[in-house]
Length: 495
View 1 (cartoon, rainbow, N blue to C red):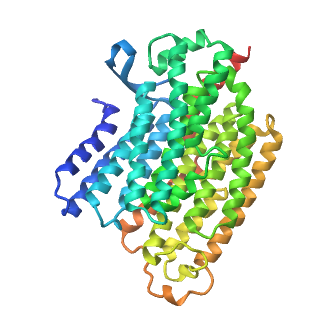
View 2: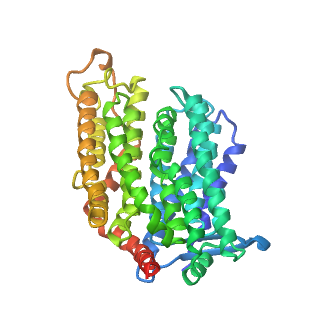
View 3: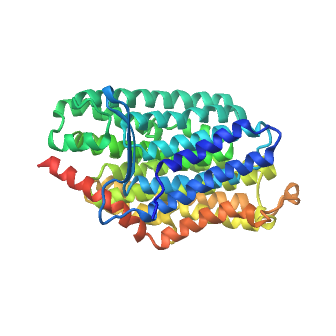
């Protein structure tokens, strides 16, 4: 049997991007079809690689390695394990639905899809890379087009939001770059190879005083991408101004690159420093959960509600990262997947409502379930998933993080439960004000999603949330094949 290479996940959207460059800009239907194919095939491959990964054997599998700049130890090096195989699957799901809901974009459609595919290629590359240089390169490839897409196709102070997002993410990228370069020199291996670096540091840990100053650079740098409190204010404004597909990809997937990098380059490579610094992160996580949740409670704009809610939920990821046990780390990776699907669904639904009404203001909406029962039902389930209701994937993830953090950080765990109560309050308020009550006269002509193709993105995202929520074990088995090894190495570093 001939097995596909991981590189095809990158090459197919890259070929699609190249094809878009030669298509006339007025042939909009062909542009959309090419973009759809360019994300649909990697979506199928992401499913294939995830299901083909052997959790019993564990470790990195499907490895590809091509030397690039040999004197600096830089290689085109790809592979998947129990963590990034799940994140690649998440990106496959969200990128497909993001392209499917992009039909309302009618201006500069060709440029829009070229930039959207660039974001997708960069994100796939970052998750698949086992070379630290290429991880950072793809990380930037994914981030840069976001500024342009917000500035060109965005709404609501789009120039301000795009600039603020760029400044914050540039600060985070600069800090993380300094940390990664320092790590490269500190190991003395003259190699950016992640596997080689892991193996070397397992036998020859960095001096503790070196770990102490490199680790916070990586955690703070990538923590800004993850919206670590208090460096989170760029995110709600950016999501509110961004076109729908960008909000879905950035909040659903790109933000998770921060947590992924903290695991890969921080906790795994410098476990002794992690034991010192991560309790501080646990305290900041509580501010994420409570403070951002209370701010979401005061919002009237649908995108701002889910923007601040997303920042609040990142606190659970940060809290789980601070607890060095298998339950919490499994919960973190599970949460990254569950939250990514949920928030992508929420922003897709908000985009549908905005396209119909040209407003996201709860004070102007109301009674829309009478005209849009399908969209209203999907929105209600997205809100319930966000609130952690059993039956959805988010509930499983939150329970795992809370149980894993109970012994180590009991007060933060209790406050995190309070965050769930706050989430439930503003989500129920949003459902009531936006979709129930009397129908306002100006919304009498609203139309629901009618065709199967129009309903497909929402059904797909919702089906994943329910399937994973009811059958989480097949994900946990994959995740645990990697997190067990990370936790074991963490405990060994204490001895």
